[in-house]
Length: 355
Image (cartoon, rainbow, N blue to C red; front, side):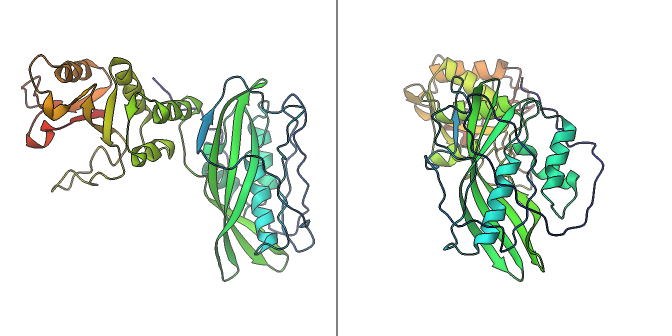
């Protein structure tokens, strides 16, 4: 079973600091065959700190998650730049530049970094929120024991009003160990800024663009979302990639695919929030249930015989130690406990919920 990774920010003492003008340190391109050392970036964005130029990117964000076990994080012929320079022709270029630098710093660190180094990196960002609050917000980006490389793809304004700004920064984060990348995920970070007499300054991180419990959970999400044996609507696939589905459920879904190909109707999004016509929150809503309407070559509604493949799968699910509930055309235990149940609604699909 997957277990939650140790979160390095838990237990830290909240630290407050005064906000004032600081200097920008230009990020260095990644050019070596091993992960390059990362220095804590000290960031602000007054009008004098932004360099005119163009952004360098090599691959568009066509996929939200990819995995790799053989590609090193960097190479001598790498054309990916570690820094992103916002052209002066952009709307609010200073704000965008600051947000891009913050996104890069949040997603770039070393495997050897300990809690103190991560703490120093967050302190250097100069957020108006405490280090503990910023650490909790950036938890999905932080994987202790692994190195991380950030690449800013594009910073877009999300809001600009009353001296406040939201900059939504599309950022590719590649995480690995040793010389190999374990996974790469494209996130949209919502970075909030505030303007005062010294220019734009970092206020807080509103969103890290989705969360997963640990590296295994993210890898499992990518595997299940792209598994050709599991057919599903894009709505369900996006639920998985957004971290809305329990890793426990994803594991059972992967194991079910080892038994038979199948087709999904819904995971979380698109299902009624509550169990229909009740005040009970559905297990789908909290990412712990999936509805399957086809097993192998047969729709559930067409394969309700006592010796059919669908009943065999329902029995397999009922015996699975991580399955909390199976709704189907059959009530296997007849005990009224609700772990196995049937009704008119569940004649055309299997409702699978995990503990």
